[in-house]
Image (tube, rainbow, N blue to C red; front, side, top):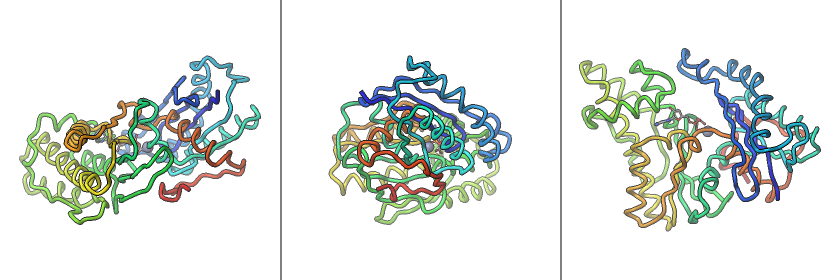
Amino acid sequence: MTVVLGIETSCDETAASVVDEHFHVLSSVIESSIDEHRAFGGVVPELAGRAHVAHIGPVVRRALLDAGLDPHHPAIDAVVVTSGPGLVGSLLVGLSAAKAYALSWGVPLVGVNHLEGHLFAPLLERSDLEWPMLTLLVSGGHSMIVLQTGPGQHEVLGETIDDAAGEAYDKVARWLGLGYPGGPEIDALAQTGTAGTLKLPVSMTGPDYDLSFSGLKTAVVRATEQQSDVALADVAASFQAAVCEQLLRKLRSAMEKYEVRGVALAGGVAANSALRDGVTRLSQEFGIVAHLPTLQMCTDNAAMIAAAGLYRLGADGPSAMSLSARPNWQLADVP
Ligand code: KG4
Ligand code: ZN
């Protein structure tokens, strides 16, 4: 039985997880430095890097112990690590640690793409995935529609040409004086507001699958300047409806073109209640299966990295010890 340790440090979460070849998660530990970034309204790379240095050792140790392994001589077959995309200083902490563990335990090192990791998250929770499937991968740094014909077989159909969906949530929340990260705050506020109170434009109405959220953010700023008495909840509901409308419209047109058997959500914005409801409704309408990962599997974690590494180890073999950080590594460039 192949068992791997996954390490994730691409942004503000220091995470480690032990996963076996059947995608059973034996442990998953996440330490976030988000509280240190809140006052700045976004992740401060220098603070994130320092926090990873402080957390990586204890987090890996806890993951090994939780999986019932000896932290000094664990029965691990490979060490998997996110090598990109992400903050370079943060990635380097995970990479350095992963190389040290792999060398001292005498096991292979496997570098994986963080976005491919997100695509593996649904596999860790369900064994009945239906292929081919369309995945809407929406996070703080990325937004894309991906066609998957099997694990590790993916084609990016379209992606954002400017801001990511989560980034738009965070920027609008900041404009409204809400906390960081903005997604959960706006999602909660939107529950009590009326969508459509603010007239917001529908972006990207073309036939391709590209997305755009920067204009929508600017439209919220303009509209709230003109209508300064509008209730915060109504702004949140209007913005959320506009984001979901764009995402669901593009997903629908991809579902019409590609005959898929499943549809999945991945990334932090996949925690959004309106988006989850919308994807569930779409899947019912098309008579296909919806794979909605649990909230903790939507956001950054190391179990999804370990899962992607299990696949990559089998498909490509181990990485070289010279493996470096790739801060701008696109999913489309994963072989
Ligand atoms: O995937 P993730 O944990 O980190 C990145 O790789 O970016 O995603 C974080 C993003 C943040 O922008 C956050 O505001 C957004 O996901 N987010 C949400 C919700 N929960 C988190 N956006 C909308 N609704 C939510 N409920
Ligand atoms: Zn992520």
